[in-house]
Amino acid sequence: MEAESFLSSIVEVAIGIAGFSGIVAAIRQRDVSSWPHAQRIMFQILFFASAAAIVFSLLPAVLLEAGFTGQRVWSICGVLLVGWFVFATAFRVAQSRAAAVDLPIPRPMLAFAVVASLLQIYNLFGGGSAWPYMIGVLALIANGFSMFLLLLLGPGTDVGEE
Image 1 (cartoon, rainbow, N blue to C red):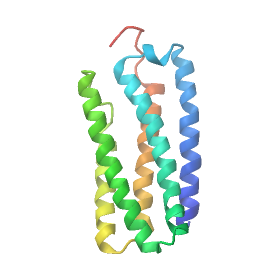
Image 2: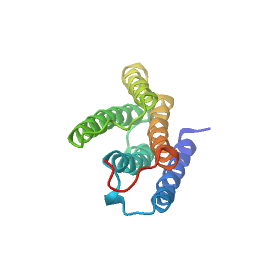
Image 3: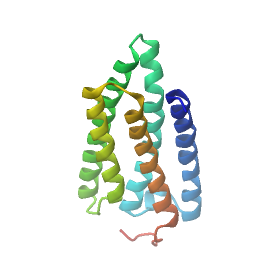
Image 4: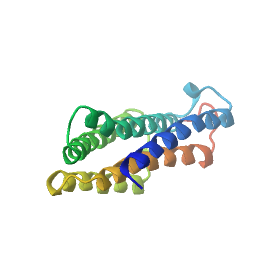
């Protein structure tokens, strides 16, 4: 599979995950603003992970059209992806602490993001290939999907529980 078709598939999956989040809201049968803090954070992570996967999947095409070479594109995209991982994780940690809830990101997802980030750094110095970047974008999708599963299959809570 070529990088372009892989990234195109990621866009489709990300849109599907974001769309299916409506199922979660319907199953919970109440306004999202009344959800416990941890569930609201998971819902936000689901949407932002899906949106980030779409943006990062389309970014290489934009850079190629701007005239960058293939190796340079993967290096630039990888650096931006690492920046996203760092920013998003720091933001969610601060958000969780402010809400006094445990960070709702599963540890394997954090490990996947660390491995994906290390691959981007390797790619920056080691050749500028597409495959490390593709793994990084896959980490975004996996994170969004993990939040979808936690919201859908996780323990239910009554309105007003925090």
